[in-house]
Length: 319
Image (cartoon, rainbow, N blue to C red; front, side, top):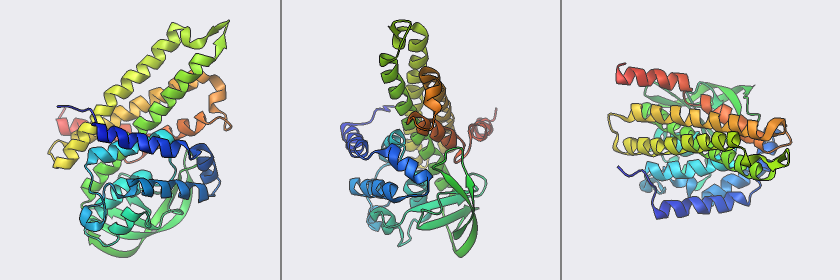
């Protein structure tokens, strides 16, 4: 099986990089953490212009109806640029829960940004103060919700909200939506990990110690090479799980959990190595690196933490 993305997907990723690279995401994330969502909304408008918000919405609902692999390619780039807001929830989970609903067209057009709370997997909704619609998913049913008390995440730009049911209930493929949520966060983690690796490599080429650039030391080379290997091994697992989701394969739960565990491990290794390479300066709030370090920690626990997905793997494999 070939897990490489094709030329069109690579070009799409490059177009996302070009647009978001010019958007000053660190400033938008810091503003978001302070409650100012204006710069972040401009970023989301850019995503709409690129067609990202329409990827997972079916064509009959004015979306693109793209393959799940295409969605994961886009989400990896969004993770690389650290886009604020309910990214996984609105772009990957909500289209499943709103399948057949007229509001799905508003998802595609960017008019309806949605966050989701799923009982047992994502009990609190991310950035409910920003979302136009809050959904609560549980046991095959979906219901509109209202935001309650806010809770601070380890990532100051990701507020978590208690939610309560407040609207009509309808049947939805909650199990499939949860798989998309877990896989979407895995893709975001791969992107964030790649950003941390790239930043660390650049820093290692410039920082000198004892008259030598630190990148010339074997310990640094090996550490960053380990991160590269971890990311390269995790990325095809994400694409493979996307193929399973597309086919509704019996192995979907296994593949998604394997991808989430590998992405969590790779992201954590990237964060630790980046911090060790940069030293204490990397974790100061003034340094942009800290924004990615905190995002990795937050994404690891979103839509099932590594321990939960390891347990599910053991159950699926009957070990």
